[in-house]
Structure formats: structure tokens, C-alpha cells
Length: 253
Image (tube, rainbow, N blue to C red; front, side, top):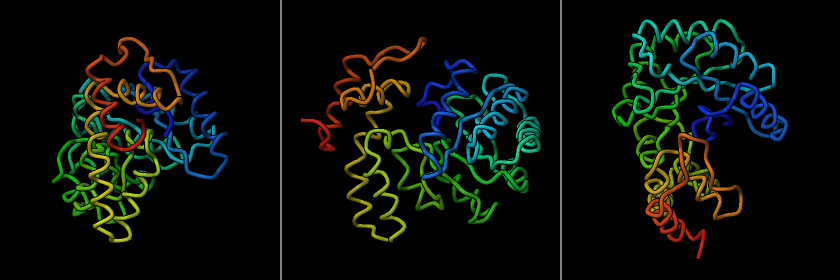
């Protein structure tokens, strides 16, 4: 999932954005699907980024609702329809009102879900009634992915299908195991994974994502803890919270 918020997409240049997606497609080499973040608050720009991702070989696009300019629900529909009509790869809506200032209603999502290549949603609306209502409106085949790690287990119980995760950058196997336990209907194992991951689900959001997760990955030797302005490195308090959660998960001493 290149060029999401965790990948600092807001501060990537267009050339960097396209290069990151190309490199990810090359590294995946067909082994797993690549869902490229291609959203923008400019419809023309979102169309261009999505077309470029398609050309690079991405399997699908994750398109965030237009931020800051706060379109109406009709504007949201037309925005996504124009992107949909301009490409041939599947599109996943990314609804995250806390960052964008706009919330797509279930009714608008239902309209969009009638289009053949609008296949699902990354839901970070912090409303656990939403997946049940969306499932009722759009049916079980409309893919609902949680965008919030701390409520991801409950999201599954409410009709969701999975999670586009921040925590999985740090503990991918554990996050996958939680999801698999749900599919296996092993609720005991699912609860054990939930309890193990809960501190990370909180700690990695004590400051704006991706500040804490990049600090966590730096402790594991995967990257530097730096972020691009206007974000800044994790404060001592955030570092302490991340370290405590990682110790609880057995990742560091």
C-alpha cells in the first residue's frame, strides 16, 4: 500500500510519488497485490496519479476523499466517478473525516458502489455502526477495510473484511494472524492477538501518523525516525509510549 499517509504522501513530489509506486510494484513482482494511494483534492490531479499508478502496474488505487475544499456529497460522487471513468483498475474509497474535513455518507457510497470498479472502502470514520450499515446497503461483496487498528477486531465483527494497518508496518505477522483467526472463527486466538496488539494500536497514534511508527521502525533498524516538515520527530513522551508498547509485544528488551 504505497503512498498512503504512513508513507508521507502529502509531502512527496509528483515525481517521488510515481517513483515510489513503481518501485513497490517492482519489489512485489506479482507476489501480492499493490494498492497505490492516488488521492488528491484536485480531481484532475487524482485522475493523473491514478492513471500513472495503473501504467506502473498497480493492481488497484486507494483514493482519499478530497481534503480541505469540503465538497458536497454530489461533488464527492462526481469526483470518484470521473476517476473511475478514466482508468481500468479497481478503486477503493478512503473515508477519513478526521484528516479531510469531509465524511462520505453511506448513501453516497452506495451510489458509487454501483459503479463496476468502485470495489470497497478504507473506513477510518471512527464509527463502528458504519460497517454494518454499509454492509446492509451494499451487500457482503463490497470490501470494507478498517483504517483504524485499535478498532480493527470490532470492525470485523460489524461486517468488515480486513484492515489497512499502521501497526502492521511494525508487526505484520501478528496483524495477519489476528485477521486469520477471525477467518478461522478462532475467537480465543483472535482475542489473544487483539490484547497483544492493543498497546501498539494506541501508542502508534499518540502523535500524528507516521511520527510514532517511523520511530518504532527505527528501533527495529528499518529506517531513520525522521519525517518531513511540517511533521517533526517523536517527542520524548511519544518515544516512551512506543517503547512500552513494543516491550509489551516482545519486540524490544
